[in-house]
Picture 1 (tube, rainbow, N blue to C red):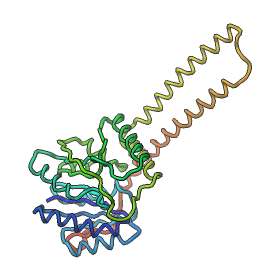
Picture 2 (picture 1 turned 90 degrees about the vertical axis):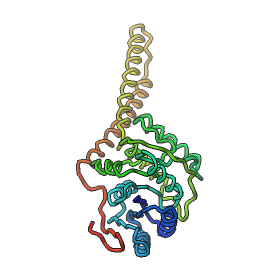
Picture 3 (picture 1 turned 135 degrees about the vertical axis):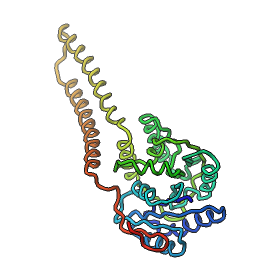
Picture 4 (picture 1 turned 30 degrees about the horizontal axis):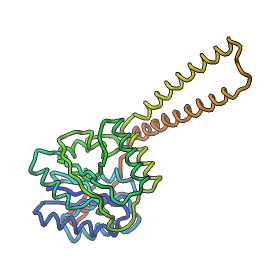
Length: 311
């Protein structure tokens, strides 16, 4: 059996379509399945739609958060409550073509493969700025961690042992795309074209994307801290050069009056120091979040086989 995990936030119009398309595909290909919808504290009727679909189809499982905890938390909640021999992550808006699930299943079931990763052959209708931002982000992750994430997505199939390995990882601040690559295991790739959204608009604003990128990089790599060290070394080199130049001018009697150079140097060094303190402070805040040991999410209700299940 495979579990198809679908994180959902304000997707009331997409729930019925996702349930119908995925169920039909699984039935047509004689694949034993369950669909795990995770309602991430939606403000619309997403949970009501999930409940309605679970009443129609006993293969549909519903997990309801007490409030919005974010997509990363919804993904890991789905992995925890899924009972399949393999799990597939897919977006509720159907931009990840459900037909690719069948290809993933065949590769997994017919070969010695633990992870079947969906890679974007094309990114669909995205702005030039968004594409450049994505390229810069994934390039930074690759350089800092060694994991190639170009064209990567959350759309992938994971064998049960991979799911168990991810569920055992204790950190609260998660980055699923990188973590699923970090655990290793034998991986194959399938390529897909990003489809248009079935309904609604993207929940990602420029602000939320920047915040997601910063959280992901700092939760998975210490590269920004190493950048602070590099800045310190550069400043040391600049300081030595300027000190030698100043002493030479002083001893040769060519020193100039005025404080322009001093002021510019102070402004430059102060800016580097404040940015460095900001980076270090951000990591300290991450440490603070981790040591509080709060759960990644809180589940208020679970529906399985048309009845409420103990959480």
